[in-house]
Length: 327
Image 1 (cartoon, rainbow, N blue to C red):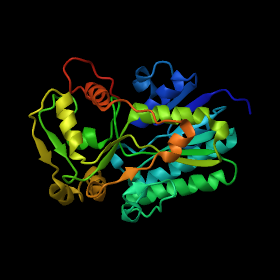
Image 2: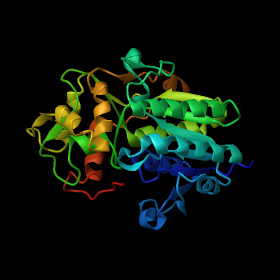
Image 3: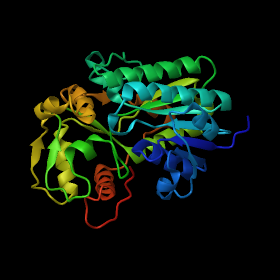
């Protein structure tokens, strides 16, 4: 097929999909974004070609992927609802569309694939024995992608820690630590004192993906890389840095209400999924990016103060700048 440098973004209004689209566009890619209501969101990315469609419908994904060279699968069910019923059919639809069009699939990966037997340092070859239902689904997603790669579909998986950035929607930072749209008056930190934690600044993560994609000729049929991002030996230092950048050095840092979350999880899907991730805050978990650095020479890395400032601006937590946040 002819290389048109066209990328289809599934999940373009989410944090990872949006930032990867921007990074690819900056490198000359044509961006095509599929959404169920494109007229409502097209202003978020005016230079993209927005197409109406539903990632749960194989025909919609196949049509949207026509002549695409790349499919970024960054779509997730909103609010963690119906993960077990929606996530795997969506990846199957992406695989089918990629197979027909000869497109490479990019999957933004997570730490959820892993259980305690792989900690504290995660390599691409670490065993994947997750403790959560969500983690088991992520493992199955990658298993299906690996099987697809064995039959001719090129796949790139880049895994990272917890996302943060100016366009982060569903994230621990935005949903559990600070309140979007308000000045930072207090920070709720989910982890134990003294336990390390890994954070991934989304623009750096997206630039990493874009650089790897541009070196596609060097990639195997199924490739995985780990992104280190910002590592804190004491994860609580992230909360301290947030209040410093926000100009609120005395803002209280509160303990996360895990007990309340567990009590309410039978009634709220979001709380159930968050509660399953508690184990990732109780132990240090870090990504080994040596393979990525060997391939690219370095990992994109925005200084933390700058990254947090842009993040807080995007979340409308700083009074001096408008938001760029997307849903």
